[in-house]
Image (tube, rainbow, N blue to C red; front, side, top):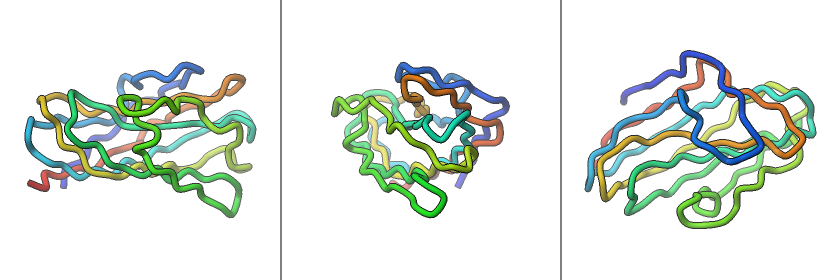
Length: 145
């Protein structure tokens, strides 16, 4: 297992975009990789919902789940295949975040590219929100086959 750590804070915008500087890793065409992101998130208010998903080069397969706290005692598990910008249109984040304002989002899955390139994290905060992906967020990844 290898790890890539994010060195500095990244502000999310209200438009779904590649979070340049977020943890990522290089993948080779035709190989399959497992990954697990641990994203340290801070929002300004409990009404500032966020959405994250990985993306990469041309992909044969991208299957993943996203675990996002939805309150002080609950977590929402989303099937990432519904969020992937290459396969669906869901780019609107939820309108709520946990009351704590600082929380961890877990994104884990499997990726097989048809072209070599880098996997990176994409993100967005809801229209009126302010959110930061904190330094120290990281991804663990490994070649599976």
